[in-house]
Amino acid sequence: MAEKYWRSVRFYKHFYTSCLVSIIILPLAAAFYFWQVTAAATKPLSDPVSDRMTESGSELSRMSKNPVSYRKKYPELYVLPSEKETISENTVYLTFDDGPSPVTGQVLDVLKRYQVKGTFFVVGQNLKTAAGQEMIRRMLREGHSLGMHSDTHRYRKIYASVEAWLDDFAAVHQRISDITGQQTAIFRFPGGSINIYNASLYQELIAEMTRRGYVYFDWNVSVGDISLSPQRAEALFANVVTRSSGDSRVVILMHDSATKAETVKALPKIIEHYRSKGYSFGSLQNSTYPITFGYRS
Image (cartoon, rainbow, N blue to C red):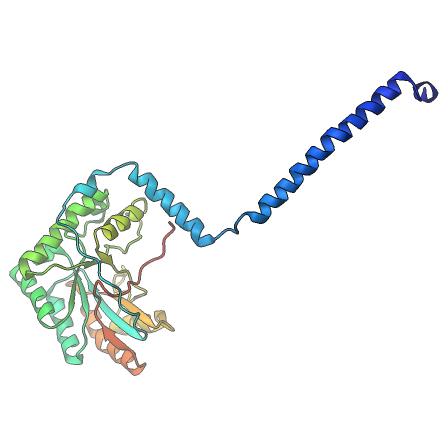
């Protein structure tokens, strides 16, 4: 078979076909290869920041293409953004949620005795009484910061939608304005900016409140006074010492609702501890760089 194939017509057909393929296909393949190499060499390196910006931009673009009605709600609910201050190192911010209550007066007495300013995130429903209203006036008279912590503090209600959140926020905002004649631009989400009740909504909530100029604050140390089993003052103080080790900026979460007598007892030790470590005390403003929980964009 080999002798018949050698120099046969079939042999020359195969030979000429192979030559033709080599002449035409190989140059094309080489040209394609060099084009790929050149394209790879001139392509800019991936920038993780740019990639994230692109992803965020895509999300914003998606949202802008689907106008949402809540952006038109409460046109008066806007504040001018403030320039952020230089970050103050070795500073402690004592913050109190869920008041005012009779306990709030005791907290204010301790702060006054130590000449320390704090930040109170109040619940609107607690401002219906004359005592509650007088309490927030006292906060302002004594130089403390006043923030919003929702009107109802009912998680399922306020986190049902962005509209529901804005309805509640507008209510507490108006209450504070009516009582004090002032408007506050800082707030704290009930349960923090990310919690099980707003898991599907928190990015949209944060984006909308930021768009309106309001500043929210989470925390990086919790005194632990919201546990199901109430803790004694000594345990609350130990929680703070343990959880704030090494932090140069500390935002402490405490509560001044009616059942937090142990928090009041722990407060002097907390203040003395940080003073002995060389920390100063500040109150949160809309110009303060916020401590916030991280979230995926």
